[in-house]
Length: 154
Image (cartoon, rainbow, N blue to C red; front, top):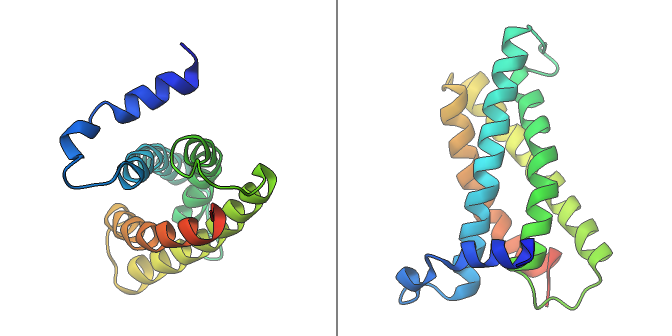
């Protein structure tokens, strides 16, 4: 069994439980999104702790922005592979065009996340991890529609 088939099998393992409520496309989007979220959250948390321990960061580039940038490196690369091969498989665009669009979309999402974190942490004084989780929900909800209608357009 290839790695691609193995990942597809794992993704679809729970689909029968959701078949009544979600089409396969939406289920896979949410499943891949959950995987990317876990990668992103783990990388963000570990990076934030590392940058905090080593006092890396300043007022121009706070630790939470550096952690967000670090986590994006991992989530963009793994996310593109997973979305390309398991979610938006009917797209007729060339892979290079899809990647460029995916990258641009994610860079805008990154800027939106940075703005969200700046407001929630610096102005509202929210906990960094709570602010990060809320930002992810806001950004990823918007990102689904952008990815569907731009990055992986049919």
